[in-house]
Length: 499
Image (cartoon, rainbow, N blue to C red; front, side):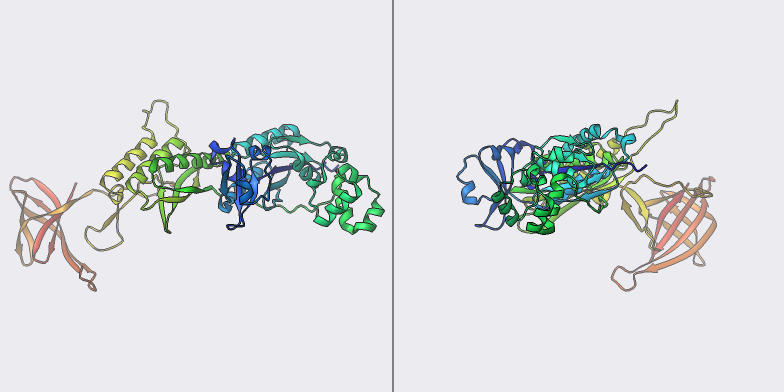
C-alpha cells in the first residue's frame, strides 16, 4: 500500500524586511519599511507589522513614506537576503532531503516532502511546531502549513498570519481553503478583474464554479486556478540540494570606525553562524571577517584557533585581539563573516590522568602575544625546503589531524641551532679544522665529518656560500663536545650543538 504524501511549506512574508531586521533586533518592534529602486523613483517593497498597522503598504513612494512620522527607511540588501535564504534552505534540509524553493521577489517560500518522517520527528502536527521553533531561532517569523497536496500547503501557508501553523488532513483541503481570499493565488491583472466582475472573492466561491463553463471562458488557466482552490492541483516535485554556507552579511546604514560597535555586530552574526553549524553537528574551524571600507577597498582578517569550537565568547575575544592589532584603515560600510566548518573536538582523559588546560586559553594567549610581538613572530619553527643554512619560517600552531605513519621514529639526537652563530678561533691543518677555541675553552678534534659546501641565490645580491663540518671534540680534561662549525668566507662560527 502506497504511503500518503505529506508536504510542508514554510512561507516568509515581507522577506526583504525580515532579512534586514534579523541582525537588527532593536528595530523589530518599530515601524520600518524597505525601499528598492534608484532615487527619486524609490518605492516600498516590504515593511514590518507596525508599519502595516499605521496604514502603510507596499508600492508607496518615498514622498508618501515621508508623510508618516517616526518611520525608519532601510535600503534593500540582496546579499543579506541571499544569506538568509541559504540558512532557511539548510534548515528545511534537516527535515527532508526533498526541498523545492518556490520563492518570489519579495517573499521566501519552500516546500519539502515530509512523507515517512514520523519516526524521526513525530506526527506532522508536532513536526510543524519543531520547524517553527527552528526557523524562529534564525530570526525569521514564518507561517507554516502541511497538507497532502503540494499547492494546498503552499496556498494555506500564504493565507496564515506570521507565526501561525496549520495541518490539513487528507481530503479536507477544499474545505480548509474555502475561506481564503483570492489574493493568495498568483492572479494576473486580467484574471483578478474578471473574478471581481463575477463577484468571486474567496477560494470557496472559485471552487464552486462549473468546470466546463469556467474553461470555456478562461481556458486552461481557469481550470488550473480551480484546481488550486480545491486543493487538487498536480505538481512535479523539483527538489534542490540546500547548500551549506556558513556566512552572514550586513550592510551598515552609516559608516562605522569604532571597534566596539563592529564587535557587537560580529557577535550577533556569529550567533547565527554557530546556531547553523551546531544544527549540522559541526564546529567552526576558522572565521574570516571581511570589511568593505568607505571609498573602496576591503580589510580581511582570518582567525583560526588550535581546535574547532562553537564557543562564541572565545571567537569574539580572538577577533577583538586580532582587530585591535590590525584595525581597518577606513570607516566600515559593510561586514561579511564566513566560517569554515570542522569536526567538533572531543578530548577523553584517563581516569587518573591530570586535568589538561583548556585549548581556548592557549588560543587567547597566542593572540595576545601576536598583538605584542607581531603576527609573524608567534608559532612553530618549520624548516624551509632549501640548502640555505638557517633557512626556516614561522607557521601558526596546529593540532595534527593524522597519526604518524607506522615506523616513523624520532632522530637519534637533537641539534640545537645557535642564533646568532658564535664566532670561534680555528686551527687548520691541511685545510681541515683540528682545534678551536669556543667560550674560552680549547677543544681538539677527535673525529671530523665533512666538509659540506653549499651555495645559492647566485643570481641576486643575496648570494651566499658556506662550508660546514661536524666535529667530535674534547678538551685536555676529556670534556666532550659534539658540534657543527661553519666557515662563511674567512669567518669561522659555531653553528649548532648536538645533545
